[in-house]
Image 1 (cartoon, rainbow, N blue to C red):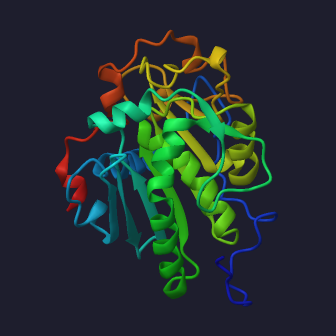
Image 2: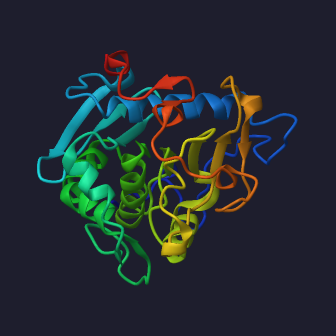
Image 3: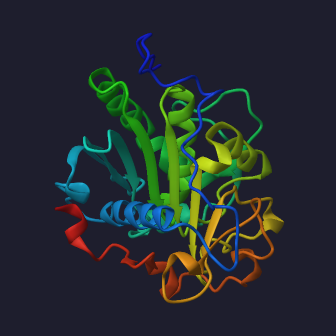
Length: 291
């Protein structure tokens, strides 16, 4: 477990720590969200997009710490270090290969068990998503552990698109539980429902609703492709770009996890064009995010 040295610069314990609040993030249909927050959504969309690249030598121009891929599950991503922002970014790729598609269809809910995950919980998650996380979870934690030895005050941001967003939400819990002193944020884009109500509440409690940014692009059908009747629920907090063009005023901060005025109000049409573009960023097709 990551323990910071007892000095004035160490992160406060999880119970007292809170990410700096973006002014005006409470839903205002006339104003949308602050430009600063919108720019953060754009930034981490690019990281999630970069995770699709076979090689990503300089994620967003920053240091590539490690790339990981499991050939059995197709789970792929990287860990980058931004020394300007003093941040470690963990990014997961979404569905691209047949192996990933098989994981996508494993709809059975399984107990939340895996590397670094909380043990005393009754939360359940999508079996395929959990299997994908388990295949790389130890690797991610080991790399972060080594990085924290040299950079103990760095924050962590986890990002992912589609299937990668689901894996990112599980990974974020693992990172929170393993390194409770590290400041942590979670950004996902086009994330399908990942687990049950207990899982959603665990994400909201341990990571914090103000530290979770679940982006949804207009009529993207993937976030609602797994129905609630199977026992699945989204976690907060959803940021729904409800119309075009992409702009801060067109993004709504939704209330709770399954806000009926958010993307849950749109019937799912599965993977569609909206799923492959998020906050101005074409997903998987822009190699410039890796140089």
